[in-house]
Image (cartoon, rainbow, N blue to C red):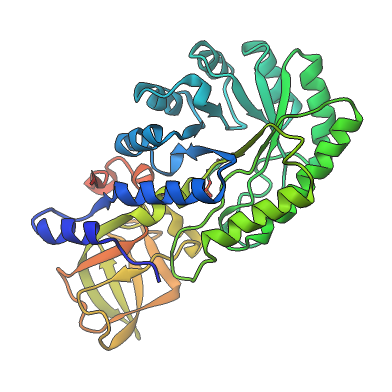
Amino acid sequence: MHQMTDRLRDFIDRNPDLEPPYLVVDLREVERLYRDLKGDLPFADVYYAIKANPARPVLELLHRLGASFDCATVREIRDVLEIGASPKAVSYGSTLKKEPDIRTARDLGVDLFCFDCAEELEKIARQAPGSRVFCRILVDNTGADWPLTRKFGCEPMEAVPLMELAAKRGLVPYGLSFHVGSQQLEPLSFVRAIGTSSDVVGALRARGIAIEMLNLGGGLPAHYDRKIPPLANYSAAIKAGLDEADLNGGLKQIIIEPGRYMTGDAGVTVSEVILTAMRGDRRWVYLDIGKFGGLAETMDEAIRYRMVTPHNGALTTPSVVAGPTCDSADVLYEKNVYQLPSALKTGDRVHILATGAYTTTYASNGFNGIPPIAEYYI
Ligand SMILES: *Cc1c(COP(=O)(O)O)cnc(C)c1O
C-alpha cells in the first residue's frame, strides 16, 4: 500500500511545533506522478483539472513540466495565466458558464470551450464567436467512488445535432469529452467510454463533421482505503480503447484531465485528536478537521481516507470518527466504522493520507471560528 513519502515524513518530524491541522504536499511526488502519466500516455496532452488543488506551487510546477490546464471559472483561468501559462494552454471545461465569463475568457485569449446542450452553445456563439468547442457526453460511471452522472453531459447521440448546430453558428466543432467518474476503480470504464465516443465520431463523420479531439476527462484514482489498479492498467485500457475504436489515427489531439491523481497521493494532513469518548457501545474520536475543514469528500462516506496514528499496529477499537464543529452533520465515518488504536487519546497526532486533492478549497471560511487549513508545499 502506498505510504507517505520520506520528504513528507521528514517535514512533519522536523516541524513538531506547527499547529494542526495542516496539509503538506510533496511537489516531487506531483512531478513523479505527472512524469509517470506522460511516460505511459506520451500522445496525450495533460490538462490538469485545477480544482483538485489550485495552489500556486502546484500550478507553477505543472506549467514548468509542460502541462495545460482545465479550468471551470474565470478566476481559475486568471490563476493559471498569472503563473505564466498561455491562454492556448487553457480549456474552459465547465458546462456551466455565465455569459460575461465566456466573454472575459475569450478576451483573455482562451479558445477552447465545453458545452453539453444547445443553450450553452448559443451563449458561446454569442460571446466567443469562432471558438473551438467540444461536447461533453454522458458515459457510464459504474466503478467510480465519486460518480458525476446526470449533472453533466448530453446523451451521446445528441452530440451529433449539437455539433451541427455549432458549425452552423460559426464555431469550430472541435471535439468530444467525457468523464468516467472520479476515483474510478475500473480501468475498463475508459474502454467503454471511448467506444461510446467512437460511435459518435462515426455518426458525425457520416454527417460531414470530422472532429479533431477526444478528451478523456479525469477519473484516475488516488490511494484511499482500498487497493487501486496500477496506472499501467488504465493506460493499457486507454490505448486498447483507442486502438479498437480506430480513433487515434483520425484524431489530432487526445486530452486527459487528471485532478485527483495529480495531487491526491502527494499530500498528508496532520491533524490532532481533540477528544475520545464512549457513547453507548461505540467509541467516538473527534479530530480537529472534519467535513467543513476540508474533508468534504467524506460526504456519504464516499472517500475513506487512511489514517496513521502513533499507535499503529496496537490493539484497536471500532471508532466513529467526527470533526470538530458544532454541526451534527460533521461526522466523517459512522457507517464505515474505523478500527483505530485503543490507546488513541486527546492530543495524539493523526496523519490523514492522500489528502492533496479536493481538500484545501473545500475548507469553510471560518465556520465556528475555525480558519481555513494551513498549506505547505515542499
Ligand atoms: C473535476 C474534473 C476533472 C478531474 O477529475 P478527477 O476525477 O479528479 O481526475 C476532469 N475534468 C473535468 C471536466 C472535471 O470537472
